[in-house]
Every structure is written in structure tokens, then in C-alpha cells.
Amino acid sequence: MKQILNLVIDKAVCEKKKQPFGPIQISSNNQITGISKEELPDGSSGLSVTFKYTTKYLSKDIDIGTIELSGKVYYNGEGHKNILDLWENEKKMEPADSANIINIILSEASVMAVIMANQMRLPPPIPLPRAKATKKEANTSYID
Image 1 (tube, rainbow, N blue to C red):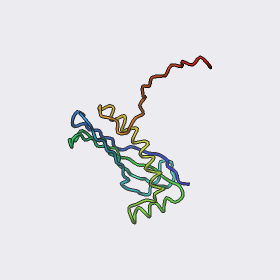
Image 2 (spheres, rainbow, N blue to C red):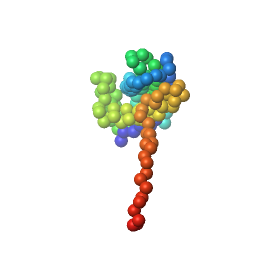
Image 3 (cartoon, rainbow, N blue to C red):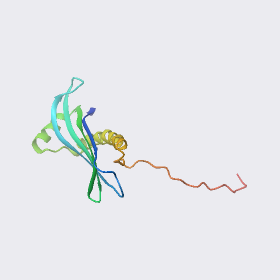
């Protein structure tokens, strides 16, 4: 069974270059930058998958700011040697393996990026839920 053991953020940088104004284009990207065999923090043998998560803010082609996170996902389980071999030979992963790891990266990094953006007074990098104001119709029926 394949398993994610932990995600560790090694670097977190948020820079606001200009005050946001008008319509802002926000683009986020994440990429797996490397895979290596490693003795994991729990003492087992597995993989260390390094990643980089980046969010860029633009307004009319003016660079407003950037959020950059990088770290490692510790991964073990059956088949981790095949993952490492494929990465070393072709610099790619099987879709099921990469989706599993990327989903963990997105769930952790997105939350941290929202917090960092809030602290720097930048818009959140992901859409947040919003309440909608609706007027409730009065029940004018006399029959229950």
C-alpha cells in the first residue's frame, strides 16, 4: 500500500511589491522538483519528494507579489522503488502516484498560502466560500 507519511515546508517566502489595485490575475503552480531514496523520519525506507508551490499576482502586467513554498513529502509503501526508477530514467511519475502526492501538496500549501496572503493583505490564492444574501419569502399561507 502506498502511503504519505508527512509533508514538511522547508521554505516560505511572501513578497508584496505593490499595493493590489483593480482586477488582479492570480496564478498558482506546483511542481515536483526531485525524488530521492531516503531513510524516513519514522525509520522506514522510502522516498523524499521535493516540491515547489508558487502563486503570482499580476495587475495589468504589473508584478504585485509572489508566494513561494518549497518542501518535501515523505512517501513509502509498496512500489516506491518503481517510482524512483521511473523518475531517475524519465523525470516523470505514474499519474496515480503523482495525483496522490500533488493532492497532499495542494491541501497543505494552499492553506499556508491563504494565511500568508492574508498577513500581507493580498487576495487569497484560492477562491474562498462566500455567503450570499437572500431575502426570505414570508409565508403567507394560512394552511400548514
